[in-house]
Image (cartoon, rainbow, N blue to C red; front, top):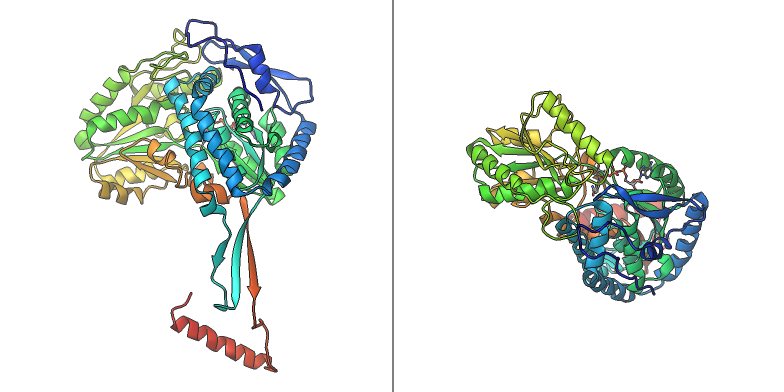
Length: 529
Ligand code: NAD
């Protein structure tokens, strides 16, 4: 078991952002790497190198799968109760070690501490949920037999084997772990390729798994460009769980189809928020700030389009703009920042391009609209736009930054149609004081999750329910029963007694057909399934 020394510099925003080399080595030792190559990662607070990450080649991918496959065989033989005990130990460990986890997330991603806190919180919720619901999801189930009393049917949940996980940089700790925990709970092992920019947060998660008592080889990590390692991973996996962009999701889906393996794809969004005429305006304005600017908008479920009823538009906009202007903008490890940095120059370039394009084509900036190199090299102000039209890039394309466009609406059916426009369908939010009406509108929204009087937390943190995208926002679901059953094969075992599925006692085929037909009619008349 490993205990990792906490990072060097304490929460001092003026200190140089540097990690203790020994700490980095303890983490990166878990990468399966024989190439002798390392690449640097960057700290978004100052744009300086943060850590050298050893790189994996195809031979390392092969080795990772060999180890994972061997570990899985032993793991599949453990009882659900043994797995549950480790999962609950992980829950406690994550809460105990949250400062270390949050520091590392901030260092690598540049996000505000309060947004980094969401990550250990979400992993702990997920660990507890799958630990305590394991028997509900995985126990062998009795099913109705075709001949009641004489056909005994059971359905087993068999682990797929080795699950490949490819995860993004935006929530590097929870996107690393939250999909893998149900895979382990169901008896699988994992080979994981985190995004190159945020390897350390993922590696800390892997160390914590081992400290919680999970066998060391059960979770393997490889590092390198997705386009190089993705194919070799898919060729060796029994299932793929991918979170990232829709463009990459399409490539993964094609490769999985070729291998005839399943995959879940959690992809992009252009998420709408609706503020209805009876919304509590202050509450909606508070929610809109979190909806649009959490993690500087680099959140798959964050909102980039806002439709506001005429009756409350002016009041709402005043409050939303005032709250946004009052946000405390800074980077660093301390609590108190309302929004952190973007992760990279590439993300900043996209945000600048979207806003500049919108402004050049006639959009109005109500607040924000500028990069802030005085705060950090990739920092961009939280930005509210009005007058965004279809010819502007940010009208339909995901910005994945702190930019939201406001649109006024007169009637609700028009707002629903506009919210449903485009190809995405991940997350939506509705603000209204009439819960029943809001729920009726939710049914008309083509998104996998809809939050009422909340931005995204109500659905995302309700881990007993499925979470994922419709249309080009994805396939399959994380969380809830679907989030664990995706990692299992269902196996039906039927034991037949006395009667056979063939003519008996000298009966002709013709008589058998008549008897069976009469039997089917009788069953239907009796209202049987
Ligand atoms: P991306 O698709 O470029 O990268 C995501 C991961 O895929 C990384 O680990 C990357 O190395 C890997 N990858 C890249 N090309 C690959 C290939 N050809 N084969 C295999 N793996 C490959 O995504 P990104 O732009 O870095 O991340 C942001 C996107 O992710 C946004 O669109 C966002 O909406 C989406 N996202 C979705 C969710 C969700 O739950 N739906 C969560 C987080 C992020």
